Image 1 (cartoon, rainbow, N blue to C red):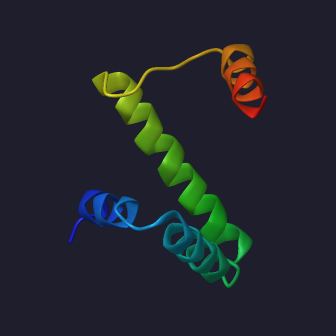
Image 2: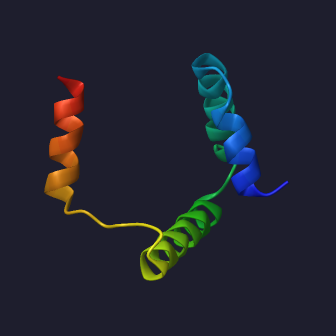
Length: 74
């Protein structure tokens, strides 16, 4: 099963189940050392950069994103 398949299946779960899964996944990262965590962040940055290059993702200015978040919280 690919990450995309797993993500699609996880998103079908009820919100409470997704939250539990997220907590368990995050807790599993607590056993990683700083070098492993840094490597994962670098991989994520490369993945996001590739998405921008391919046009499958779009960048927005931080101010715009933060404004949208603030409006959603109202």
